[in-house]
Image 1 (cartoon, rainbow, N blue to C red):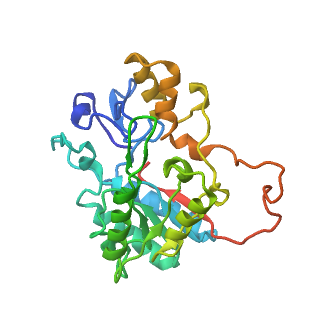
Image 2: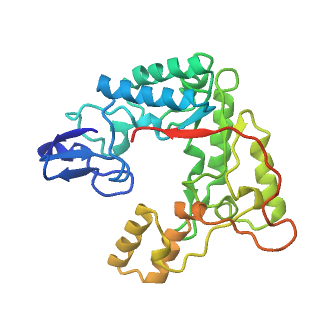
Length: 306
C-alpha cells in the first residue's frame, strides 16, 4: 500500500470518482493513496518485495490452469514522484502510463511468456502510436483496451457518442497497429452505458450494423453480457438504485446546485456505469431465455494497481 505522511496528501488531490485520493488512517498517522475507490488502496510497485509477492500470486493462479488475465487499469501502477506538481490541465498525467512502468510490465511479461497465456490490459494513457510497443511481438501483453472512442457529446442527460470522433479514433487505432500490435475491440463494457442508448437508436438493424462494424475490424472482439440481445439503459427512478460512487456524488452535487431530483437523476442516469451492471433484460417470449447450450471459453482473472 502506498502511504505518505499526512502533510504530503495534496500532491495528488482527487481520485477518479472526484473526491480526495487520500484516506487518512488515524492509528498509523499516515494516509494511503487510492486513485479509485477508498476500498482499493494503491500498491507501491516501487517496493521489490511487494512485486515479488504479486508475482507469486500470479503464478499460483496460473499453476491452477488459468488461461489468462485481464489487467485492470494496469497503466496506473507507476506514479510520478510526490514532489512533481499536479498538471492543472490533466490531473491524471501524474499517475497514468508514467515512465518507469516499463520495468514492471517487463517483469510481468516474463511470467506471461513462460505460461503462454492470453493477456489483455486496460491501459489508459497509452496512445495508438505507442500501443504497438505494448502489444507487438515484443510487447508486454497481447492487446489493450483503449478508451478514446467512448467520448460523448450533447447536454447533460442527453449525451450521445460523438460519431465522427468515434470513427476517427477507431480508424487511427486500426492504422497504427496495422503491421505491429493487436487491437482489443469492444463497444460495451462494465464501465459504460448501453450502446443502443448511447448511440441513440432503438432500431434492431442499426444495432446489428453497429455490432458488425467492429466484429470485422482487425483485432479480437469482446461481447459484453447483455449486448447480444441489444440491452438498453436502465430506467433509474431513485438514487437508491445506483451503486456507482461517482453517480451518487454527481447526484448530490446537482441537488446542491438547485437542480430538482428528477432532473438530477436524468443527468447521471444516462452515462452511469450502473447501466451495464443490471440484470439481463429478458422475458418469457420466444428466444429470450438463456440458451441451454454450454459454450467452452477462457477463464480470466483481474489484476491491476489495487
